[in-house]
Image (cartoon, rainbow, N blue to C red; front, top):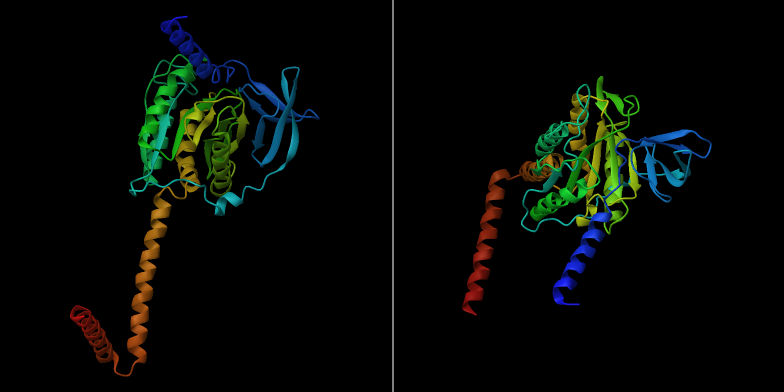
Length: 348
């Protein structure tokens, strides 16, 4: 076999291995009930699931897929997770040595996704891009630099992740601390995917992480950190976390995450409201990112150091009977002592 044929076969093999993982991660037109062993509904999904996949529900119960019967996925209960540790224990994130503004990448694998009352699938660009833009603006208000790709990856088929892979790779060139693939789900039940926050109807957010890549653990940790922060600051906004079959291009780097903002029977406005609130959740989940809250805390720390120093000086002047004159004499003695030591070293 000559060199040309060897190269051709190697290329075909690598293409198949690379592309076969993301394909068929979603069922476009089929929604499955996920029920416990007694038949009680746990959640609904358009994902393809396999035994061993994990689902963390809104109340932080961990469920494991154990089988499939009559078109329904069966789950067994593993227990209830305590995610409060993520409120005090920061994720291990490498900080840019140059102290530059932290970067977050956003893109859209499914470019046709849209919301009610119009067509749920639209020609490029779908309304999902407006959700991405809302998230971008809200993250920038939190102090991040956001690289938002508006690349078109249509059609919405099993190869969409193949087309969006190049986009995700390009976003990684700017060394982001997180990259978010913004989607909406296809569960046809608005009550299931909506909540009310501060008297306003808001879409719920589902977090999806893939198990078929080497970053599976770091991405799952990021998902749980977001869930913990959301439970604290925006209770009820997170529908749950799937740690399931699929890659979703998350093999490209750590903290590559897929967020589903509501479903197609909700409105664009409800999804945008969720994006605005989830920017705060993302920022709080990246404590070394330098978001607005972190910078504010750092500034407050500097102010308090100055206040304490001035207070100490004031106390010194008040309790010293010679007051300012004594402070002046102290400064003169210190300066004289420093100059004397310097001359002594120079004469040696």
